[in-house]
Amino acid sequence: VPRLVLLPDAIADAQGTRPGHALLLDLDGRALTVLGAGPREHVSAPDAATVRLPDRLLIPGLVNAHAHLDLTALGPTPYDRDAGFHAWLDHVRAARETLDAPASVAEGVRRSLGGGVVALADIAGSDLTASIQLLRDSPLDAVVFAELFGLGERQSAALTRVASIADAFDPDARVRLGLQPHAPYSAGPTVYAAVALHARERGLPVSTHLAESRAERTLVAAAEGPLRGLLESLGLWTPEAAAHFGRHPSPVRALADDLPGAGWILAHVNDCADEDLPLLAEAGATVAYCPRASAYFHHPEDLGPHRFRDMLDAGVNVALGTDSVLNLPPDQADRLSPLDDARLLHRTTGAGDVLLPMLTTRGARALRLDEARFRFDPGPLAGLVAIDLSGTDPALDPWTRALRSDAPPEPLFPAPTRDAPAALQRLAARPDA
Ligand SMILES: [Zn+2]
Image (tube, rainbow, N blue to C red; front, top):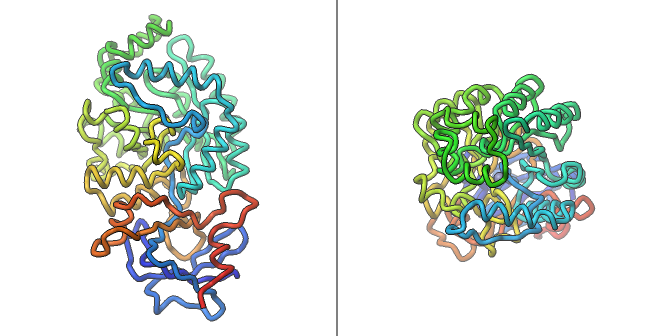
């Protein structure tokens, strides 16, 4: 059944929510194409199968702008605020040693597809080759970022790695390589500059963790605080490394020379001064905001509420990310879905329509994918997700109901694996009369 008409309660994409609208789709093997979208009475085709989807809202496939699939097997891990970030990092480093990285990435792919995700930015901290291969075998669009560490005199080893990854970069691959200096407290300015150069000259996707915590600002601005203690304890606080710090007022401004024109995906930016906003906007950077990760580490209590609305108002592209499974509530960890981050933001800030592009087109822009594939425009569609609205207040608009629901997203397309039929194919095989 190649053509079908879907009749949900409503459809919603980055352009807004449309109650009573239907979709006319062409489902040809692994490709899904929107032929039409509009009020039910106007959407039909003589040879199309009709599928009713009562109590369902349909949205395009989601983009996860910041994930660590290789940590999936570690599972949700409580954060002990009194023991602090250092103890948490020690735990992760030790647990990672015992990890079967390929199996963990495969599980991350499964939970991403289960979360309605069709494209993601994955930080491959364990086994870059395995991550690339597993994502190539999956239906996901992805950028796999090689994680780079190195301060002071240790930067030269990172630069060698930068060069070899840049050599292997294929801009036309469905799963592309990218470069990710880990964070300003773990990668030095020479590494950031080299990565930015490859991004500008050859279009390599680039990402980093930036302005995540108050401790990061204390280190960058004053060369003091708990992150300095961490570096000292690891034997990394050498004179060369120490020379990077205490020179810039904020982590964002410490990268002022590296940000413009490189298309950075900046994970977190929980710490953002007024002076940082125009720099982020003019640089064309994306902030990959991970609300559940920020809450998990208690960053809003240290830094105030995240400034995603101010960023959007200033012209910064902001997309949503899940970060790793470690920071997810246990009852949400069987899926890796930024929809759950959007739901948290709705509960804590009342945000509504602004979250639809943050889950779809803004993430696509960050990954340099065609944004039209993440809207219900006529043409190819990257993915399709249903959300069960039953049990929510029918007086509210359908997207608000989806945000207030705890129902897991129901991925209709693509299929969970390359061999399996997509849920949409199963629906199409038994259409309504
Ligand atoms: Zn991260």
